[in-house]
Length: 586
Image (cartoon, rainbow, N blue to C red; front, top):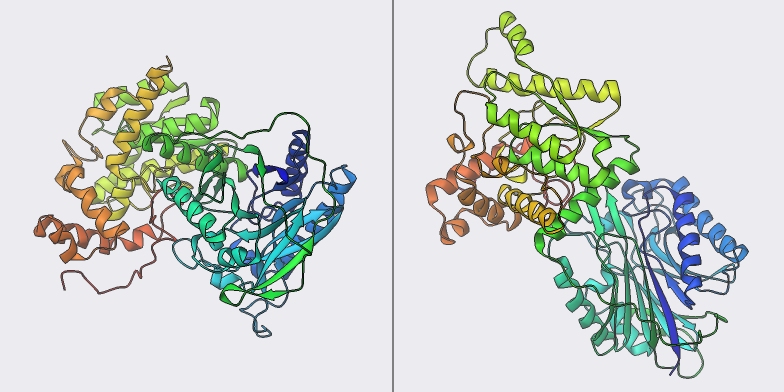
């Protein structure tokens, strides 16, 4: 049986950076070649980054992607890497965009992958299954491919597939079995959500059984706006055995030697197989010889605890949002409470203390312990700490306007927002807002006040999970002999906005241990009122919570982006009308 040394390049591209992404391919292909690799694969739409969204409709961008692919093939050859087959995702088109008046049936933009070899594009594949759920809108952008590409590489027939092809039964993987391939290369841009890694391995194993072939699955890593890609690339045998698995949330070169069945007979003509897919065959040409010495194994990485996984996702999402958008630093308000403490700790982990500014913004209602807790967090993390009292500014407003009650509470929050935005404008910081998913769900925030900011690291984190993350981060620091970043007082005290005397969140909201399960059922699970009550929740509390969620849609529509870590984040995952008279209580 032929042996191939596979190299899966789990890397972090940037949307729109064709030159930078091409440079990544060249650099990592060199690394792969230095290990003796004989075939190399990069993630879905590697050249353009993913998802490119409405850039698909710009014909100039499509043309630039295709030109970049041609240049990359030539550059790899000039680099002395032409003998090494390299699979790269990119944006292609064989017709006008589907939204244009001159659109043609069955033609348009394509989510594509190309095999580059000896300075040429020797094979291309167009994604067959196009996801159109959750964060995906691929039916809006792309035309489905109707052919499975099979390339003969090193005496092995290798099928090319892309991401969603793996998540749907039938189609390319069923056709791969009928085509008798020995290996399926699957390039991916599969976004993170908690415990998705537990789903991914069994899924790859099912497709290996369906294809009767080994699967090499390479996934991108990095943050792109609200999406985080965690990597978790892997190689699974035809019998379902996990052979190698890459770590999550870091760039990684996974190299592994595999024995594969030799291709049987000539490549042959086109065939029509499963689900009407044509099988298009191509010859890959000569590849580097099998390296001497013992076999190389990629190793497997054990999964981590849920809190560790979420923390890494949030850190990566924040770091890439800041760095890819070229912000020098971030600024946030430090209240002494749990949410701002967790956001500050995330920011320091993502960027380092020298790039994080924390501002205490006390009013007459800010307790002494909250001020002390904010200062203590700054001391523990080493961030740039400042104090800007807001009461004189609030008093100036009140001397010129007649306000009372909630209006005064909101005024305090808005003065804080003005100060943070002023520091942003003056010094170039990105403002981080700190409202958790529970608060966003029920509208427990002040527009243009505590909701102000350009990015929200905990936007998709329920309040009860915020506490769990804080405890995990402190325990992890203690385990490593470091100072826990978050003061115990911030974790243990009852949450409060401190906008009026003695105020607590529980004055307005149910306890979070009661609130979050209702919200998770309603928001993440799409349960209606009856389903929530049948699950054991108090009907009166359910009615109260659902009213708050339904009437807060206009606030959520104006909220800052933040990393998605759940099955249904606010934003692209959950799209509801603002003007909407439907209520679950009838």
